[in-house]
Amino acid sequence: MKPLVITAAVVGAETMRSDNPNVPYLPEEIAIEAEKCRERGASMAHVHGRLADGTPTQDRNTFEKILTQIRNTSDLMVQFSTGGAVGMSVAERIEAIDLKPDMATLTTGSVNFGDECFLNTFPMIIEIAEGLKKHHIRPEIEVFDSAMIGTALRLEKMGLLEGPLHFDFVMGMPGGIEGSEAALKFLISLIPDDATWSVAGIGRFEFPLAKLAIQLGGHVRVGLEDNIYVSKGVLAAGSWELVEKISEFSKGFNREISTPEQARNILSVQ
Ligand code: KMH
Ligand code: ZN
Image 1 (cartoon, rainbow, N blue to C red):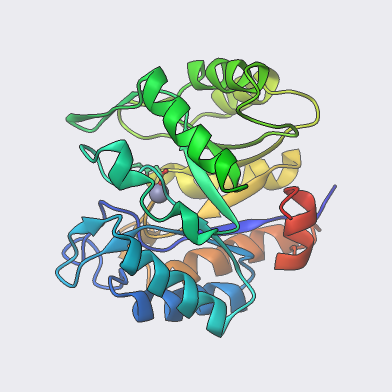
Image 2: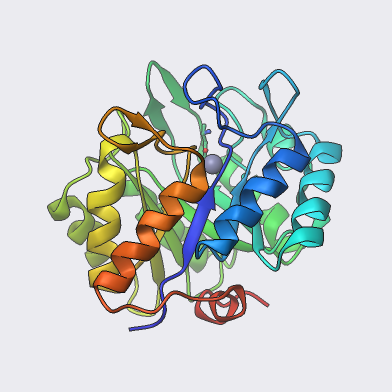
């Protein structure tokens, strides 16, 4: 098995300090948190932007600061969200991609997101995929439900995505695919043989799915974006504490943890 790539989703667009006081908002806070995650085994930071009061933003200046500060303080790969927050326009969501992060997300379908809808119509998906292609940014395909895999394969046929594809299965979110072993194995069965994948379990699904991914040869995303607890009822001291847990699990399963340099190779990032 290839070494385990751990992605730290340190910010997100939904988790607020009222949920967990350790969510970083400002670029310097995000960079400090990302560095702590690197020290505990993460090789990539998945980032969103926030204003000082926590309001989600995809503002280019904010992302420029985040990218610069993470690159100044660590060798982490940086992955921009193009999902942003529910309700944002595509233009807003891809405003910062010309900054050339190492990767950026691409959600290949719409999904109910709590009480709202995270809208990704086919034309919207094409616009984001074209933007990533134009700037030579490797997409991480975010899969909230199984139909999103078929759409990604369609984009590959259209020449908008280039293999080997890399998927992130976001599982256990209300409105998306369930966080079960059967569902994970079903998603794996749908992707091409040469594809790579990671799993981002939401809430209580984070650790059980991470353990499965470690054993099945996949990769893992954790962080306060996805889950605010380190154990039942105990808030995580930061995304770094969740990364630390994954590193411990991986050692327990005798799986090596990748460096950012190895992760670039594993995920075919130039
Ligand atoms: N915040 C969600 C609406 C991504 O980062 O690309 C979208 C999301 C996916 O988090
Ligand atoms: Zn995200």
